Length: 85
Image (tube, one colour):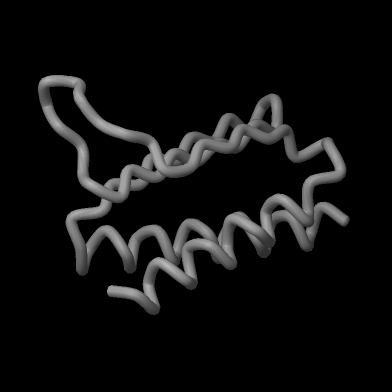
């Protein structure tokens, strides 16, 4: 179970790096291994340093939860974003 979650988080991280390197889309990842916490925030219109931005997606998950489906949905959404670039 955890190996699949690790693979999904790794794929999400890799795709995040690809997207942010070829676009103005800002994606924030947070991972706290000591509590198995993972979160992602996607800002399609870019981050404004004045603190003004609209979050397109925000998910926070504990990897101890049954969250493979949610991680897969995040990965699928990132793939869609990359296809549309």
